[in-house]
Amino acid sequence: MTAAPPPPSPDRPQSPYSPAYLRYALGLLCAVYIVNFVDRQVLSILLQSIKDDLGLTDLQLGLLSGTAFGLFYATLGIPIARLADRFSRKGVIAICLTIWSGMTALCGTASGFATLLLYRVGVGVGEAGGSPPAHSMISDYFPPEKRATALGIFSLGVPFGILVGFLAGGWLDQALGWRNAFILVGLPGLVLAAVVALTLREPVRGGSEGLAMGDGEAPTAFEVIRYLWSLRSFRHVSLGSALYAFVGYSSTNWMPSFLARSHDMEQGAIGTALALIIGLGGGAGIYLGGVLADRLGRTSETGVVKVPMWSVLLAFPPGFAVFLSPNLTVVLAAFVAPAFLGLMYQAPAFAVTQSLATPKMRATAAAVLLFVINIIGLALGPPVTGVISDLLEPRFGDDSLRYALLIVSAVLMWSALHFHLAARSLPADLATARAAAARESAGTAL
Image (cartoon, rainbow, N blue to C red; front, side, top):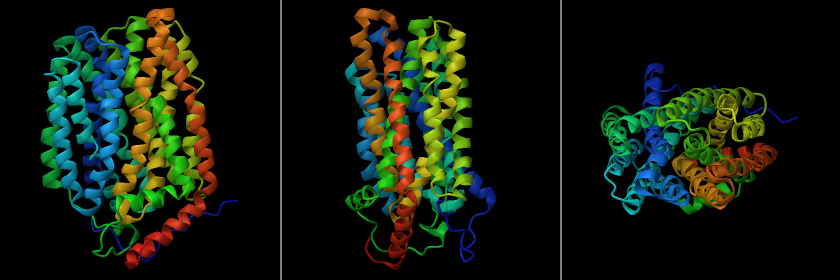
């Protein structure tokens, strides 16, 4: 039987922030994450209109929605997070939010594939600095036993951002065209960046664990990567998360086009349906994943990764009804289950990574996790699905996307295996992490 994690230390100092401010700070960071996903995901609902207007192939659409964004988002996340581990985290967030929101608005001015690709790269560059500093700040606002729940609330930005992106993008596209849709969803982020810069307070690094961090240098990116990759549980959590993201990003990016091609839905109706299913269902799943991870983590350290393992396993079977049923009502009803279950991996995966990281490497650690997730999931998932669809089109016509998505969904089983393997080594790796944090606090090397 796995030993329970140690209880919170009675010597841990009280938080210098009031409960009201902690709720505000977490809510503000969640709002930034919502804008992050609105600006990232609005392209998905606009893909079919862009394809028709610019005459693009599914591979080109996959490059726009996946590779152009994901490659730069993933690779620049680590150096930007390194800045956040050394300097002001809220400053990094405010600057990056300004960049990605401005680039989203510029997408509406694109004259063709090349310029739209360039602007999507800009969105990826900006968004690379959004999540890692936020993960680090949340981990210093909230103690370990509340971390998964807090990160679960923060992660509500994913489904809520998708909700707003699909809903606003679908109806704006139908009423005003895809170009105006980009402009109108990009502008609010510029206002939010000013709110972050003026009202968010920088927490003390390590303060939530009662660790006094000296003024020494934060570990280099190479040292963080070497340390994290030496932990088997991190390797398996990151690969399990990335393989789920391979399926999740493919489904989210291509579902609007699938519903338009195979079920003749209009953009506004598609946006409304997916906004409700992914936004509300996925939101409930993300929040529940964080709460369950914290509760199970109080009795067993392995419970944190058992949550994503079972949720990913259960998310696979409904996919057959989603992609093979000819009945639209059945398709949408069946999609509720994977939308609810699939996103439950996020809060546990983020919380495990923050617990394995030392306080001075938390932003970089989050960026390393997101690098693995986005290189495999976002940079590869949508274009691979697009290639499969293009290859199947001569035989299946508009239904080629139906079978491409079904083939890709089988990767969920591989994802669940990695979460199962992570559970085996997690207790020993958490002990290693606690010792490393103590050495860092004392000013000695990792």
